[in-house]
Length: 54
Image (cartoon, rainbow, N blue to C red; front, side):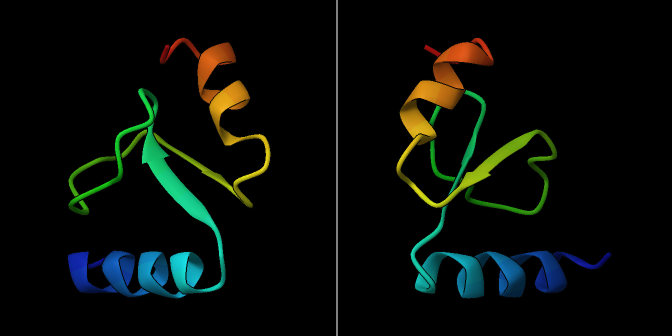
């Protein structure tokens, strides 16, 4: 997929209330980040902790 396709999907996801970060909890800033965590936000911090981010 092209970077603009990934960015468009991220924008739609976040505007709908989702949270998309890398495994450490840092907001994804480019399509170059391939390991991501995407949630509705409610369990995001706990999930990144389980995945080794915190």
